Amino acid sequence: MSAAATVAASASHVVVIPSYNSGALVYATVRAARAVWAPVWVVVDGSNDGTAAGLRELAAADPQLRVEILARNSGKGAAVLHALELAQAAGFTHALTMDADGQHPADLIPAFMAASSRRPEAMVLGRPVFDASAPLLRVRGRQISNGLARLETLGAGIDDALYGFRVYPIAPLVAVMRGQAWMRRFDFDPEAVVRLAWHGVAPINIAAPVKYLRAEDGGVSHFRYGRDNALLTWMNLRLLLGFALRLPSLLLRRVRHRPPFDIR
Image 1 (cartoon, helix red, strand yellow):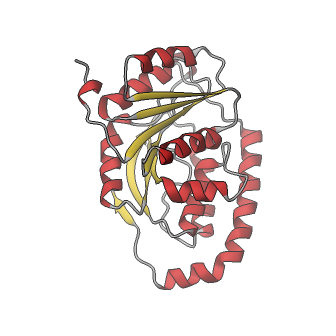
Image 2 (spheres, rainbow, N blue to C red):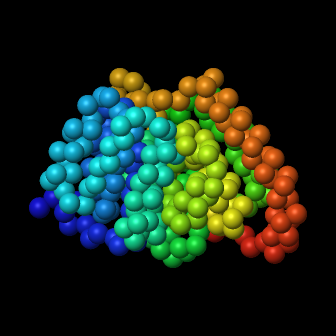
């Protein structure tokens, strides 16, 4: 019997892995997640690298692995929303999202889920711990994004707005996403935490390592500096406008502020 087969299935918390042309790394990511959690759902976001067929084979032998295949690439946020709507209909209340490319620590899934179970009204956010593999430009660039997220939420306690290894309460996130047309691509992760904070969803921050795999090790990155930085710039313009409109209510909440939950 495999280790994955011995993991008891949760009725409330599901792992969601969006995947777009992740190559063979997606199989290792899925196996690592299944070794510590059930159920695990993968959303193949219009991939044309042949991984959809391989994932279907894995799912055929594992009732706790579900694979959803989207006909065309719609973006990370759209893929996650697809899974969240299905999970909500199936009775799940929380979802842990993680990337398919091997960057995120699957072994920490149980700890993040446990933190979410203790504080189900909160979102559990990974605070990335970088090693030498992290591109310096990416590390420094996210400092700007994080500073803007803290401004836009008036210091709600978000340590990192970009790290996609996190647990969301499904109902408020689905409501937020249905309420506007954005958050469907690379802008999903930072906009989700800002808008959830606006809706009173408190963050719990947990340190988690992140690794960047080299191309020769199978690493795949779809980040494009020009395109995606333009997308993030437009996102922050929207959020800054939303922040200005919400400033009175955010200030009132700040007066009643409770410190964010933080696990170092």
